[in-house]
Length: 560
Image (tube, rainbow, N blue to C red):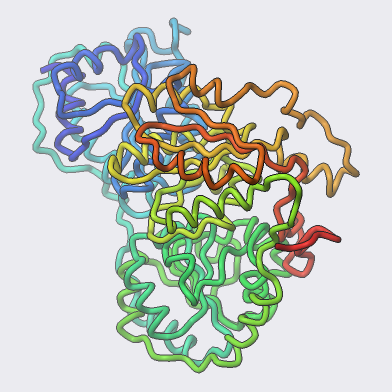
């Protein structure tokens, strides 16, 4: 066995079933070894960024660690955006890259780059393999680090000569991580303090983030046992069903009025698996001004108290803590609080202006109604992402997959590839924008090659829409370099050129028919909906503002 074969054997022992990647000169030995390992299914992407976003979609939707291969130099560097994305959104990934031979490292050899140096700030950990017999231990450590504690990406850089070296070591190895001991069990006294504070609260709110999906069942039971209102962040959408009567929606810059006002008037916030990022808090000095007690549950102690003052810190796994909270749950007297929350919900539903032209909101709602929400959804980044977050109501955990912290345009299509690979029998929808889609649209070829029946729902407004919205509101309509319409392709024809079924919709009268045709088609589909080109996402809290500055809807608009 050589080093390349040892890598694949180590991956198989970790339970890996799927690998996303692109071969090249420096990782060719791994691909040669892969030829003899049919049980390791490889998905060939058309670009390394596509491969790593596919691995992210796979990991987020399944809970398993995603694996991605790339060659040295440009191949490895094409993973950088995905690594940073995975670090910010706490996605468990193991990236294995080829590197030039050890004797050539540091000589500016062909396709050489200091990959461990470049990726050190954007990975949870990384390795440069120096000895072939270290491979089993390093792979074992990489999976432990990636998947435990706060999940994140780990990169293993393997020189080409190490891949050729004869392996004489053992796979019966233990990780050597003496300083790495994530806290799983929250402190019992802190949990008791949280329950006591909750019992005394008059206006409590529970906030759930991306770190709470694996705790969905005990959290739902806890919410129902106590009657507490629930807010789910962008990454937490689906932890509780979005149409659950206790869910107020998403908070933050484009969150619901009810969710944002709940935070402004709450006297207690119980936060699990989130990091209070700036798109939620806005001006931190004005965030949650009425709150008396913040209970923050997170497995990463560095996040507790980093942004928001925390009164009851609980370091531990969200599911472990949620089960203990559930054991102590008691019904709360919140009738007056709920009366106020329902009044806000009734007075300020999400804006859906009536227009002559088709709107993004209509399209998202049409697909949700046609499926009942029984689908996995991915998105790109921009206005379409926010419309999907507002109007798609996820039914189950891990089903709304989007780039949150980094906001990576082009994320939607390759992430959908990974989701479909992880869930071959499920319906997977990618809500995308014309700008975001064009950054990774080559992955249509991946859909065709592997017969992945992803449905791409392209909301085409002819602009880099979110940038245009900001220029509209804050730059006095000085639209600079955001026009796409005059140079956009015919997306349906583009799809057909790849072998994907294409539709184009401009009229509202055709919406229902094409939604049905899209969902009925057995293979991949790209359905382009040409929507109102000056649409805006509202409510909106301006950057640096607070919920007090929330623009609830465009002035003078008629709501449907």
